[in-house]
Image 1 (cartoon, rainbow, N blue to C red):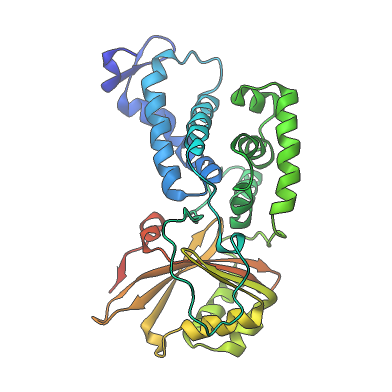
Image 2 (tube, helix red, strand yellow):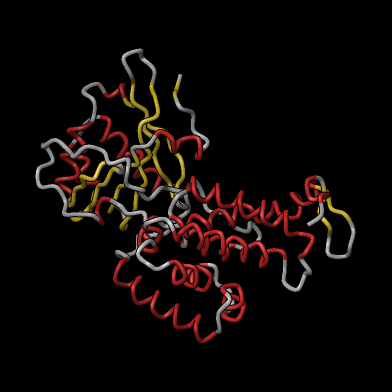
Length: 335
């Protein structure tokens, strides 16, 4: 690319496209590229960085883009290569339930946080084509936290093959070309990925709109019970085999009664010390928790991402990382 790439890029017909025009051309794909990188890496922060890297590489190489594929396909090819390279030096992002057995005593002290572990992270939202309801449903289904966690068990190229074919519904020849393999090799990758995913993935939770009134009402009841340390109410809202995890804390709990007892034991004695705000994560409703400090200010504490089973909550992942709040457009403190 000539020196003009710092202020302009050559279009495929030889005309000059400045930086603003390049941004206009690639801007519509930024959200879905970020979701794609998140599915590959399991980290919203890493996904943001890798999309920046993808667009920078695309900008530098745009003069050589000959239009033999669509701009979207070309960007996905760059993003895939960027993700595969990143995964060469990174281990999978686990959840606490993937590293050991659940704790036996909800009243016992939990293990110390393990910030050195690259834990799985939530994602603020799932992009979708507002004019294509089917695409929105598919995009949301491909963002479930349980699926992202299960994808982490797949080798990188299997992961990419499965995301392209089964989540994004790319045609086989197009996905094979993007990965630089034959169609037969792609199908082999896909078959192995599907087999391993069935072994790693838990039962699917119900997929609903993030604004579904029944789910929001259920979460409101949970938030009230949690604030009030109401064990009986929490138990009624949870499935019998409910799971509660809280990365970066390795300790986790299984069983509705144990989860309710632990949640109630960790709630402040004064309900007003907690403020809980609705948000959305991984294509579903979620809760942001703020805890009051000695100065009376409620500061960011955790993001709780639920999974549902009918009218009850089957899993709660409470991400104890205030650094996630800006990604969700949430303030660090509440007035």
